[in-house]
Length: 338
Image (cartoon, rainbow, N blue to C red; front, top):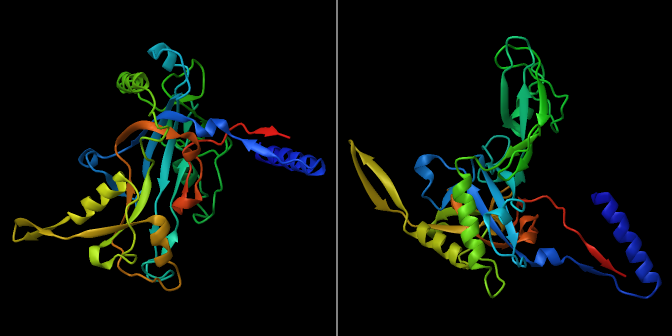
């Protein structure tokens, strides 16, 4: 599709130029707001926190509901056919170990990518073991045991691996993300568990009834990555938080307290921290010689559950954040006026 669209655009540009006209591209859908819910999967003891470590693999999902220009009366029946969903996974930041790569340097840039699951089914008589796993987990396990460093570039249905239960070859198939419903005899893999569906539908319905913001501006943010330093060691002291959420993170960092254990007794000491967005911080942590050696941690900013109105275009890659974040497939329709 990407190549076809490129050819269409090139042809349209050539025709417009030959006829002395300008080519205007309109992506009206991207300028509309869409009701969304972003969820970050957390361990029980981390569910109340604003952030989670960006140096660990993090997963979550995003669910889209109605666009702001829909005019029908909000209802559960109206929500059912328009809700869409995707799973996402954060491939974490990797830092140099001091041997092959210098300490305090970024050697593995982070990404948020869409991820489907794969169903593996053993058809051996007496077994029938069936499991659903993340695609990247299947890929890693599918490496040739004789060549454990061999790169596997992707998953395909003929990538057979032994059954975990009986050791015989299994059949595999890709599962397609849906929001809530799973069609009979399909390869659907609902993102929302049945036990969570009523609460999510209710939350979407109430937000839809209230309507989109009158100023047409987004009301929620998408996951961002922050570098964490001691407050006095932040390499760019001129940076200022651009929005209320970033200001809340700055306040959280400044109020951080360090846990101290002494002979079984536990106390806390003020340990003010400072943060920088990834796009700014990464320039201080480049090989061969990092400009800053004070980095303490990387945070992924994402509430366990966040609901609001967003621009659909913001779900696609954005170079301004300094890392690749893709939360939706690029199936936008581009209208050509020539």
